[in-house]
Image (cartoon, rainbow, N blue to C red):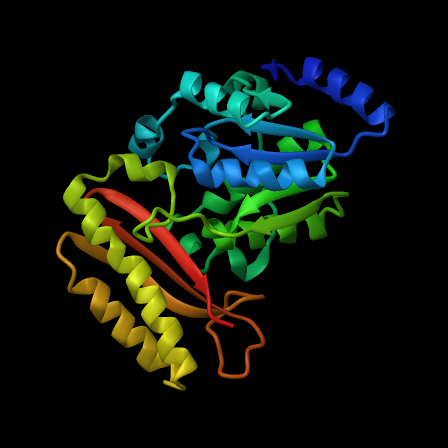
Length: 279
């Protein structure tokens, strides 16, 4: 695996690969890699000639400086995992390589910016689009692989690609779960044993919501029952549980062609998100 920390060196290397006719599959991460990330890499290996993974903890997408400070950065362990997964290239730039002082960025992505995660993390998706645009611009991948766990983020990135007419195909890959159903996340390392047990209610509520929907229960009632289930779990503070239109993330209607149930909650001091595609 080749490791690059500067844009110029990476771009020169990628240019040579492109001249040889290689397609480039890209996985963007903030590190603290787990099997969910490695499953994205496996998809990239199947669909592209060259795989590149970036590890960059992006400061502009954190609303809370303490959250940024606390974000795990086990770079040696991450590098070893990528080596074992036979990743071709790691791009691990310092902040100064990605940002040059005072930069202004605003992309009008419409209501997507303020719904759900956007409401609880104002400015978050401006930070996401800013850094993903920079990374796409440096790497110029043919295919980019993102996890379904961050469903809204995938929609935001697809919207950016459409608005800026970028020549990259964004592929959403299924959620990988622990054997007990908890969605894999870099934040799970902050959960105590008790927190982990309590966090399982998120997956249980999503599954219950799917069953209720299939039984014909009205959407508002499903949301009410699932929210109550999570709120009654000790150590768990619900932020939202909603059935949303899978294409717009506006509230789902019975006739919506695609429906996704999404949840966010704090378990102990750790904020977790999860979702399941209902239709």
